[in-house]
Every structure is written in structure tokens, then in C-alpha cells.
Length: 281
Ligand SMILES: Cc1ncc(C[n+]2csc(CCOP(=O)(O)OP(=O)(O)O)c2C)c(N)n1
Ligand code: SF4
Image 1: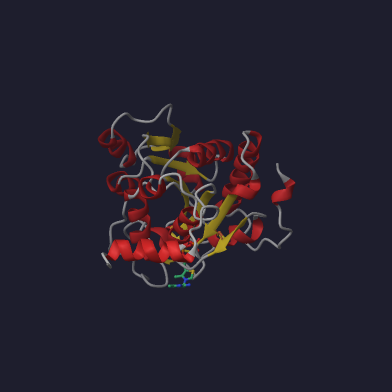
Image 2: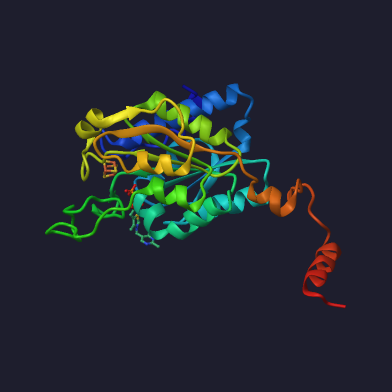
């Protein structure tokens, strides 16, 4: 494990929290990516706000501790500002599938070249366990004391229909497997989405259920509709890469190989381009 990834910050996650598995998997993945030639200086993270967001405090990587639901928008800005960077956004299910859902879907639609890792614990954990978009029907929490009457969303089908070009599910209790998914996601040229089953030992302690139901996929499905059928299964919970395809990425479609950091236009040129765009004579 890459010790230089430790920040030394006191870890305040509850003992047994699935976030520990995700942190361990990320560290393993970064080490592997470094072995494959990625410089840590070119890896940047953004996080939302929640228990998951504390991963920012525990990972010695550059980035931005963003706002609730804005980690994907922040990651997009970083990527467009300097396309040479690899950018990974960490979100919670409340954060990414609730507050920030539009950012997530539009980043997938654009095939933005970033990786999104969702710590899916089925609750707004930091704010004491309100029902989130992925909470099961009947979920009891401070906002739904008699049980939520809403049905949960299924994230992978949502991302597949939005156009994500890499869609995967991992489990915080399978660290090695998850780290491989993260490596593949970061290497993928385009929008990579990894939904991680992350038990919260306080609000959604589903370890037993997940340990019984998760099943590793051999390889991705060939079509989106087959991947969707797999994603809605409940008798088993497949983990692995559901779907992967190569498609043009947003920053290259928009700017070619221009890099705004090193190819920044002078002021006069920027004004000229804006005037040209506006049709000013
Ligand atoms: C715009 C905004 N709305 C609400 C909050 C309050 N808030 C902070 S963390 C959080 C819940 C986080 O839940 P989730 O994203 O699922 O992450 P988890 O804590 O479960 O990891 C909320 C609602 C906030 N910080 N900003
Ligand atoms: S409240 Fe839940 S998600 Fe938050 S640190 Fe504790 S176990 Fe983890």
C-alpha cells in the first residue's frame, strides 16, 4: 500500500464502515496506476459532502472538497481546465443521485473523461440517516419514521440510458475486486461510473445480505439492454463491469488537443474569438 497517500488525519468513520473498504481500494488502485506510469501529480480528486466526502481528508492527493452534489461539476471543470489530468469524483448516493443528479447525468451524456465513484449506502448518513434515492421502500429513518413509501432508483440503468461509456458496480467488502474496477475506470477514455455497495454499520448494515448475494461478473455485456437486465437483478447482485464502449470524449470534441493551461490565448485573441462568435464586425 502506498503510504505516501496517507494524510495522517484522524479517521472519524465508524468502526466497520464500508468507506474503509473503498479507501483501501482507492489506495491500491492509485499504486497500480502509478506502476502503470500515471504520476500522482496528474491525478486529481473532488468529493461531495457527507461521510463519503471525508475520503478527501484521508487521501494525500490534490483536489477540491466540493459542495453537496457538486463533485461531478467540479471534476468537469478541472478536466476542461487541464485535460492532461485524470480526475476522480467521489459522491454519496444522496449527493450524486439526489442533489447532484443532473450534473451526473449530463456528464455521462457528454462522455466527459472523468471517473465517478459513488459510495452507495442507501441513506443520507452524515445527516443521521434520512431516506436517500436508493433507500429501499419501507426504509425507516428520521424523515420517514413509518417507512419510506417511495421506490428506490436503480443507478446503473439510469447511467446506461444517459450514455455512460463505462458502467460498473463494486462492493466495499471486496477490496481487491473494487481496486481493479477503479484502475479500469480511471484508464477508460470517457465517462466511467462505479457504483459501490457501501454498508453503513449505523443505518444500512447490509454486509450479510451483500456477502450472500454479490457475484463477480466475468466480462461486460455486449449491449446496453443486456447490461440493464443484469443491473435490475435482485436474486443476485452482480459486481464488475456491466458495459464498456469507446466513444469520442467531450473535451476533444470541443477543443481538439488544445490545453487551456499551456495553450492559453492572449487577451486580444480571446476578444477576437468572442467577437467572431458573436458576429461583431
Ligand atoms: C446544498 C446542501 N444541501 C444539504 C446539505 C446538508 N448535507 C450535508 S451532508 C448531507 C447528506 C449526505 O448524504 P450522502 O450524500 O448520501 O453521503 P453519506 O453521508 O451517506 O456518505 C446533507 C443533506 C448540504 N451540505 N448542502
Ligand atoms: S454513519 Fe454510516 S456511513 Fe457514516 S461513517 Fe458511520 S457507518 Fe460510515
